[in-house]
Amino acid sequence: MIGRLNHVAIVVPDLEEGARVYRSTLGAKVSEAVDLPDHGVTTVFVELPNTKIELLHPHGEGSPIAKFLESNPSGGMHHVCYEVDDIIAARDKLESDGMRVLGDGEPKIGAHGKPVLFLHPKDFMGTLVELEQV
Image (cartoon, rainbow, N blue to C red; front, side, top):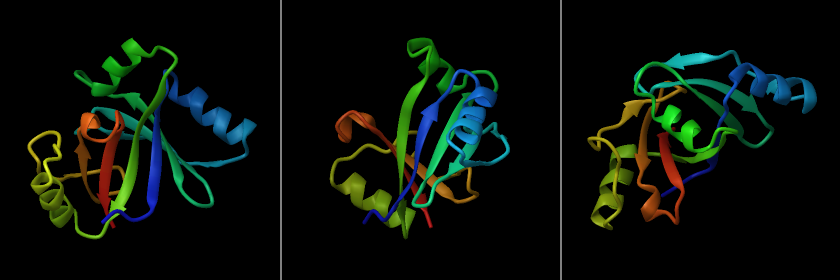
C-alpha cells in the first residue's frame, strides 16, 4: 500500500533559522515559506536527493504545532509522510484493519497540493503518519 517516503516533518521554533541551518550549514536547497492556514502551519521544504524534510512552524490561532512547541520548546520530529496511489482505498483498508484516521476521515489538500490524511500515532508505534496521494 505505501510507496516511497515523501518527507519527514520537523517542528522548529524559528522557521527562518531552521531554513538557514539547512541552506547555509548543510548546503541544501530550501524552498520559500508557505502558509497553510487550513492546517495551522507554515512550511519550508528542504530537498534531498531521495526525499524531503519539511520544517513546520505554527500559523494562526489554534495551530496544533503550537501545542507541540509548548511541550518541546526546541522543536523536534513531528511526523513521517508516505506516498499512496489511492488515498481513499488506503483509508478504507486501514479503517477496516482497525486503524484510526484523524479528523473527519476525509482527505484535505496538503502542502504539495495533493490529498493527505493523518493516522493516529497510537496505531503506529507512537509515530504520527501522514499519507499523501501521488
